[in-house]
Amino acid sequence: MPTYSFIAENSTVNLAMLKQALRISHEAHDGYLKLLLRAAKDQADQYCQSNFTDYNNEVPAGVDVWVLQTAMKNYEQGHPQLSHRELEELGGESWTDDYFVYFRGLAPYRREVGFA
Image (tube, rainbow, N blue to C red):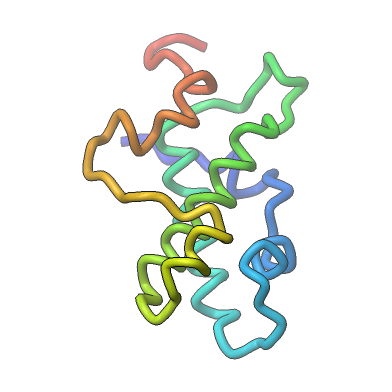
C-alpha cells in the first residue's frame, strides 16, 4: 500500500493551534498531543491520497479543520474526566465506528483511487 504524506508535511495545523483549541496552556500533554496530530494527519493522508493539485498544492482548509477536530476528539475520548459541559464547549459529539461517517469531512477531498 502506498504511503502518502502531503497533509502531514503541509498542514497548517500545529501543536500551538491544537492547544489553543483545547484551552490547554501547560506542556504536560505536549507529547501526547503531537502524537494525536500526527495520527490525524496520517489518517487524512491515507484517506485522501492526494497532493491537492486542484487546490494549488495546498492542504484545503476543510482538511485542516478535520485534522484539528479529529485530534481534539481523540484527546476528549482519552480524557473522560472532562465534564459533559466542557465536552460541549469543545464541540464534542458522539463517536461512531462507521467508516463513512468518520471520514465524512474528508470525502470531498478524496482522490479517486487509480486517477491522478
